[in-house]
Image (cartoon, rainbow, N blue to C red):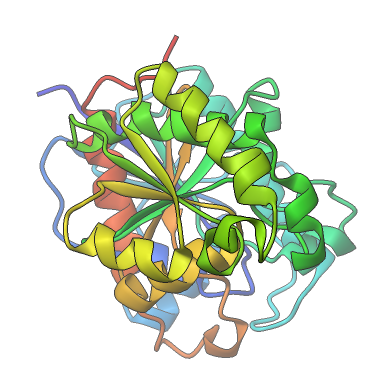
Length: 330
C-alpha cells in the first residue's frame, strides 16, 4: 500500500499543541502511515520531556526515505522562547511559519494531509497577522479559495455559514451566497465522509426560525430563498429549522449534517457531544486539512494533563480522507 504522509504542525509552542500532537503521533499507527511533526526541534524535545517519551528522529527534508515518525524543522529562524501558558508574538510567528511550510508541502504533493495543532488568535494579532485563524490563512495560502469550516464528532456534523465574528456582526454577514456556498460544500463533503445521500438541515438564525417574521426577517428574506435555490441545484437540503430543534433531529437521523448560521450556534451542540474527540475539517482545499477541535489551553500547557483524544481523531480522519478522492483536488 502506498504510504500516506501526514504533516502535523506544532501549533503555538506555548500551548498544549506540541504535547497532544506528539502523544497522538506516538500511538500505534498503521504500517503505511508516515507522520511528520513540523516545528522547531526544541519544541518537540520539550513536548517529549513532558510526556516522558523520546522524540522521533529529525529529518532534513521531505524528499528522502521517510521513517514512520519524524520531526522536521522548515523554519530558518531560532525557536521561540519557551514560556508555557504565555501569549507571545514570537510563538505566533513560529506557529505561522509551521503552517505556511505545511501548506506549501501539501500543495506540492509532499504531504497527503495536514493536521494543525491549535494557535492563539490573540497571539496572531500581537504578531500583526491579518487572518483570524487557520481557515482563513490556509484559504489565502491556497490562492484565496472559497472554504468552509466543518466540525464533527461521532454523532454530529456541522458546517458554519459565518466563522469568527462578533455576534453583533453575524446577521449582516448572513447572505444567500454564503448559505449556498456552505450547503454546496457540505453536499460535496458528506459523500467523501461516507454519507452518499448528503441530507442537510439548515438552521434558522432567530428564535423559532423567526416565527414567520415576528422574531426577525432573516429566515423569510434570506435563508429560505437561499435554501430554495439550493434545492433547484439538486441538493438534499431542508429548512430553515429552529436551532433548538434541528440538532435533536440530526441526532435521530433526519439529517446527515447541519448548516449553522454562526460559530456558537453550531459549536455549542457539537462540543457538548464531542468535546474530547471533535475534529475540524477545512472544506474546499486541494489537500486534506484537519485539526483537533480545541484551543491552546494555556492553563494546561506544560502540565502533562492535556487530553490527546481530539488530536488522535484528527490524525485518523486525515489519513482516512487522504485515502479517498478529494472533491476539491484539481
